[in-house]
View 1 (spheres, rainbow, N blue to C red):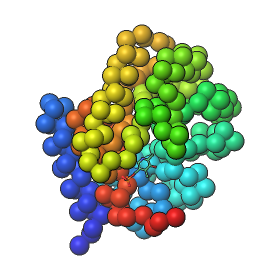
View 2: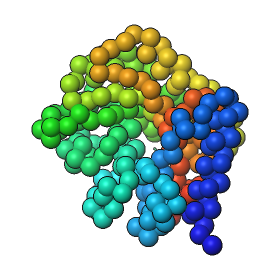
View 3: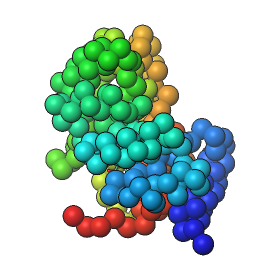
View 4: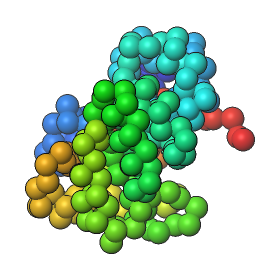
Length: 231
Ligand SMILES: *Cc1c(COP(=O)(O)O)cnc(C)c1O
């Protein structure tokens, strides 16, 4: 029995059911398998079972995995990102979910320019204004988006958020809804280089609620790979 393949099948079924409940197509929701702390053997099992996007939080850890597995999958960077890692991240990742400040956006733009690339990014929003989490305040979104849209080597594809932690997934719903509403407000003012189609929200404990509220990218780790070792 292959536990990862079983987990994955079960999650795909739940993703599809959640999408259908609200009249969405399951194809509009992409699964990002979060592989931080997961070794190559288990990642290979996930790829064999159909995973097409891997999400990593730490550049150092991701580097070795990307060197080995390379183009077999798409790589998304989902962790907190330091400005001095911009060059290395741009060189390796298809989508960066965690752009949370203008200084970082500028560093990514410069790195992308040097590498002759247009880097796809999401802007990370801290809806609950939690001090322990990254992301900009929703009130700052229009101004930040304006500034980032002016950077020619970045393409803003949407928004990302991590709501506060709840034992009941239903409690996260207002945050997911708030991200979608923020996206809708921002999208009402068309800007060149900006296409806010993606909403990255929902993790192992609450992805179904996130999909009901419009998630297009769900970031799922433990429900696929099992519990992570405690740091
Ligand atoms: C670790 C992580 C996840 C996955 O969390 P699980 O609860 O294991 O599904 C999703 N998003 C981010 C930003 C993470 O750091």
